[in-house]
Length: 177
Image 1 (cartoon, rainbow, N blue to C red):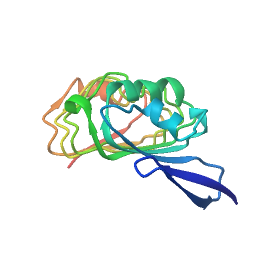
Image 2 (cartoon, rainbow, N blue to C red):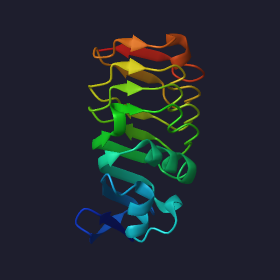
Image 3 (tube, one colour):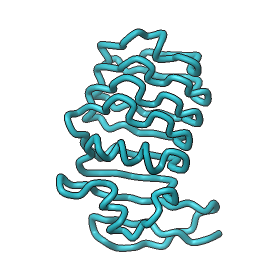
Image 4 (tube, rainbow, N blue to C red):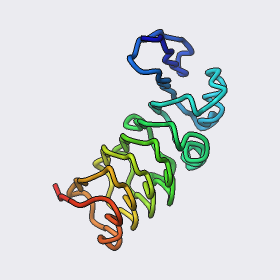
């Protein structure tokens, strides 16, 4: 087992942790002044492709989603946003489109709207936790997510755009809770 470092930016300290695979787990708190790119640089992460699990708290802006999509798309496997708040309480269209490394995503309860094509072409996505606050889901939400076989929709969702297109090319089972 090789040691890795978990970085807690909110307290600026390093904690050594052993994990079987070589993984880089980053836990960061974003503020209105510090974006994800800057937070990673402040933590001495020179290459965002080394991050396999990202736990974000604080304020996430749409620019942070763009940064993930453009700089971590093939290597980021797990994204946990359960303790974050999202700018405008929505995740914008194509936020994670083509992030083929993503296997697990947790969306916070503060999110109300998931726009179109957010996880389009996330071919390794197997686990998704949709926050309880979500009321609207855009089309092509899980387009071509071949590894995702089931989607569970909470009763809080009152609008789903073109339901057939949400499951386009991947999901075979949709359950309402």
